[in-house]
Length: 444
Image 1 (tube, rainbow, N blue to C red):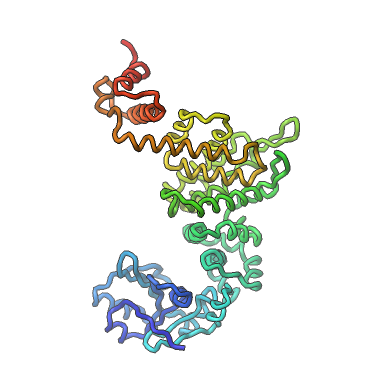
Image 2: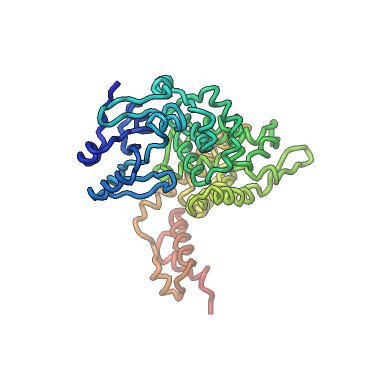
């Protein structure tokens, strides 16, 4: 079989060198995708190829000096990953890779397909099969990558490969956390996150990455019936994912969607250590939201999250009970809804979706999900009203004219006035200034 690949490199380079396109690029081509990034290998010494790139003014940088891996930048959205052939031949290089579906190569000049592990057959059969257990041991991240391909490609993990994963999964603990985070985010960006995390739990891998989840498996909560906390957390993730994937708010795209799913799994992480019983034998978990927020912060630090990712995850867990409490009220006032919007800011609707997923994973409550629907309706009404108010009724200059000094208090006052305006409690600038004088300016 011959395959023609248009590699976006200078014609002189293409003619001068034996280049092999390999790995994910070939996999994606056979799956019908148009590659935006390419994986290539060249015979040693790779320095000769790099020298030619310099002559042609290509920009590139080192990915891994020890492994002699480089990235050639073509544009903001297109690049080529380059490495020297590992082993004596291209066949040996391919056999040293993770899975058969990634162990296919094409000789660029001739278009000849090189498939020493029958990867094309597994591609057609939608099977994830490791080339060997040794390859998993050499780079244990490949254990997690099996689940990434399970989520992103919808392929099944072959039985022998699963058996190797069940045996070798503790090796993931020697892998750099940045690499683990990268794979987890790719899984969470799909609509198969719950299914994949559940599979990881079944084989034991999930507890290597998140040992904090293990106590949930042995802790139950009793309301109307008894419920295993890990089961509840998994089901919360399942329902939250369904809600998010069905109707995603523009602000919930990308990494925020990932963090919402992540938080839905970890929202009750502190329940085992806050467990108490009342006289009737029902369970309570007072303060689990606050303690849980601190626990997920430590998890985020361990996984090398950015500060923004860490803070978002922490806030989602810290306030996950807030929508439950509001939706349980017989009457949700605009004042209470406004307070919720102020406190949760851009996470107001993500938290509501997560709370709904949490409720669906719990024993039914009186009124079902009507309280959550009422809360969402009121929040949207308030935001719509604020949109109509094109400019603030007062400004910082007005506050200065009242004798107040600029500082954090300014934002609090301005937001409070706009909330009261949205609620109809203040309608004019004069009313706003009178209110501020009475509340914030001490009489002399």
